[in-house]
Amino acid sequence: MPMSAPPTNRFERRRATTRQALVRAARQILAESGDTSVSIQVIADRADVGFGSFYNHFDSKAALFDEAVIDALEEYGRAIDEFLDGVDDPAERIAFGVRLSARMAGTHPEIMRILRHRGLGHIHSDRGLSPRALNDLKTGSASGRFTFADPEIALSALGGSVLALLELRLGRPDGDSDEAAGAMAEMMLRMLGVPPGEAREITSRPLPSAG
Amino acid sequence: MPMSAPPTNRFERRRATTRQALVRAARQILAESGDTSVSIQVIADRADVGFGSFYNHFDSKAALFDEAVIDALEEYGRAIDEFLDGVDDPAERIAFGVRLSARMAGTHPEIMRILRHRGLGHIHSDRGLSPRALNDLKTGSASGRFTFADPEIALSALGGSVLALLELRLGRPDGDSDEAAGAMAEMMLRMLGVPPGEAREITSRPLPSAG
DNA sequence: ATTATCTATAGATCTATAGATAATGC
DNA sequence: ATTATCTATAGATCTATAGATAATGC
Image 1 (spheres, each protein chain N blue to C red):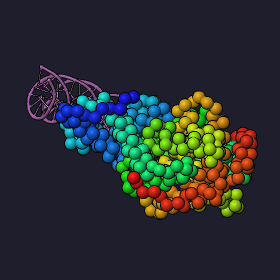
Image 2 (cartoon, rainbow over the protein chains, first blue to last red):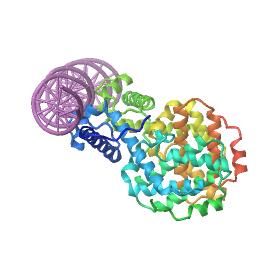
Image 3 (cartoon, helix red, strand yellow):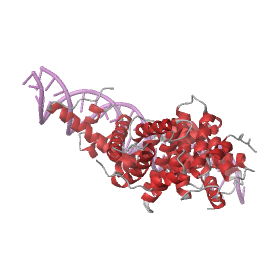
Image 4 (cartoon, protein in one colour):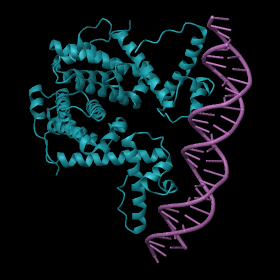
């Protein structure tokens, strides 16, 4: 799949702007209610775009919402990369990834609310946290830092646990989110075969800041 | 909430039959596509019930689908209880629960497909596997068999992991389901603080049969 | 000249209800 | 007499398209 070329002229830029407005509206709706039975009219109104323009860009509501999820996943992946750049130890990367995801529930609520509703079907996607985590799992397994039977099953456990943590934090915003995320990260490391003492130590390290 | 009394006369039995037909139709639809935008007409047809009868029992489609999920969760809980009756060790119960859930993807596909689509919001429900697992987590924590910071976070990780395993197995029916479930169960025990060797041994025990 | 957007609308579909019909209780 | 179910339908809503309008390319 070739990377879509950036718009070259006003026509393409205008077209891209309209499409983006629709995708942004769809993202808002996914984050707020997750109710995709909302009418196309409502989506177009929210995007401040003529009703007919919808069909200029998408064949169906499902196609738009699918793209909106992809869009959120890409942004999630870029945010994770910014933070994890320069962190090499797979165990540290996994623990940071879990803790950052929980923190992003506060800093990037739209993205994380979308993943809460739609993430389960993307745990083995090649976008978002998953491909990065899968790489870390394989690296850590090869170096002996992790011991588990199958990277795909480990990724499932990790992804499902992060989604359940999001569900918990976004559903009940009370309680200490960082503490909960730390407890989850520590459990993930133990699950992967990191000795308990070491798992705790790694999890207690300060989170890196972006960039 | 009082347990609904069993129907006493023909009127109530007939009413219960119609309601049950609607719930069963909703369960089928949830399992097949999970698409709740299907029309009430289609649901009534599938239930072989007059269209107007729907409003005799439910205010909205959402109310019906919510009840259908509850219904599936209750059946899931009863099935788990049948298998785990007589198993006392919390670690063994947790491992069996994970492996049984994966096996039920084959033996009880409707229930498990419903949970795949709707389970994330019920990880802390008082129906299904969750209340049983939470009890095991607390018992095991009290006896020192498990070591984790917070039973709610542990339940989130366990529930999210089981849902991700279901997603994996129901989405790609190839591969050895029992093997994947065993690998997942072993990781869950390690996550909870069971030593790796013991986690492996417990996971390798034969599953109990129902009753 | 070409292309995207916008407005207006035809036709399909869907919800909720009214009223008729059938079954049961007492 | 009471209650549930069923059929029929009014009114609302929604989708998809056609045709007009506006913006840009060449």
